[in-house]
Amino acid sequence: FQVSGLLTELPVKEGQRVAKGELIAQLRQDEFEARLKTLQSQLEQGRAELAALRLGDRPELRRQREAEVRAAEARLNNARSELDRFARLLPQRAVSQAEFDTAEKTYRVALENLEAAQQNLAEGSIAREEDILAQEAQVRGLESRVVEANIQLQDSTLRAPYDGVIAQRFVEQGQTIRAKETVVRFQDIDEVEIVVDVPETVMTTDIRTADIVQMVAEL
Image (cartoon, rainbow, N blue to C red):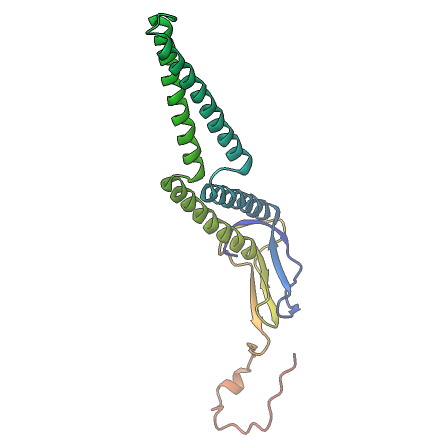
């Protein structure tokens, strides 16, 4: 295994033949799966936020900002009309200087409010470039973490790379396994090691010149 974890599956025994792709051992899956799902969820959310930044405001929020601009325009028009009326009445002393000053101040405030609403609408339409770049970096980081978590999930399952035999088991089910710890010794059935006990009388003879007609191995 390339990862550490609790060994929950070890269905093979020593001497057992195993076909290519057959399960040899498996670590506890829920932790690896939970991490992968959490990162995938964070990645989906990050991508959605990035798309929103690129598109600007959501439609309903944009309509709200547009409504604020229209309302500010209406208040400015009213304030301008009132200021114009007071400007005509002031020379005739039909209104006081204080009343005119108040109307003028109301007009200036309405103008500032309109400018603020227009700026708010413009900023919502196109996100700041630095915000988009920051979100793109976050998405790339999450993509890398998802790939890594997926690899770790795959590495938590050990399968036979080819047809072979379990020559030896080094661990037991329920044991905590360290990364790269040897779990089994897997023998290719096309390459079998044979250990033969040869009598001493044969060893003292030059085996190269011995009259050996046939050699048979019983397995």
